[in-house]
Amino acid sequence: MATWQDVKAYIHANHSSAEDVDADHVRFGWEMDGNRTQMVVLSNQLNGEAVIVTSGIGEIDQLDLRKLLMMTNETLFSVACMGTLVVMQQLLNTATLDAEELNIAIGPMAAVADAFERELTGKDVY
Image: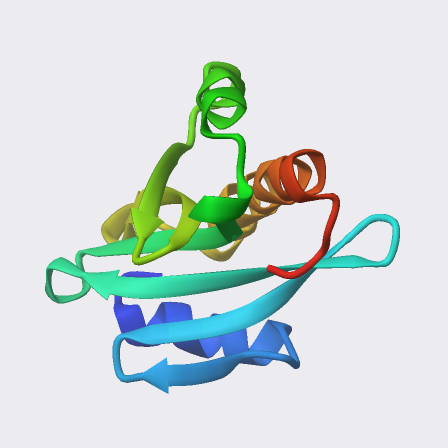
């Protein structure tokens, strides 16, 4: 995959829940163990040269932020706040990205975001 369009096409072909939010964002559910689903959003960045993978953890006012910060010490993914939603993110370079690398990048990050959500909220909202 060398372009944003290739990434979007791959996601649509392999995830039946995929939907375009707009021209630069596609969202889909990543199936997790235990009948849980983690919502993932891919965002076109730097005119197609990069993709940000984002997955929600919980609303900021419903999280123990001290515990969240301590938990982030054990992961390679970044945590950010988008409005009131705390999310996990990672940046991928599309120039060197192939389908296997995309799945390898999304799966572990979705699993960690889901584990954070479960630990911090006890829910499966995102």
